[in-house]
Length: 86
Image (cartoon, rainbow, N blue to C red; front, side, top):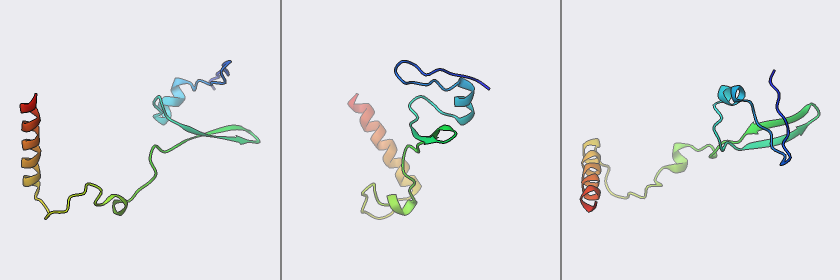
């Protein structure tokens, strides 16, 4: 078992082994819950769960469906145009 201290600013550093085992990177936000046994930290999900139906159509394209080849050609043209602009 590893230990840590509470800083004068109220901060607690989670040991590296704990962060690594949960794949927690800097910036992860936690919900803090006070329990009879102590304090419980639950990582917050960065985005609410969504389904494909929730986000379908968010790109705003209203034309006919494009083939993969047509999409690749469009991407290549946009890259070339951006490169030509410098």
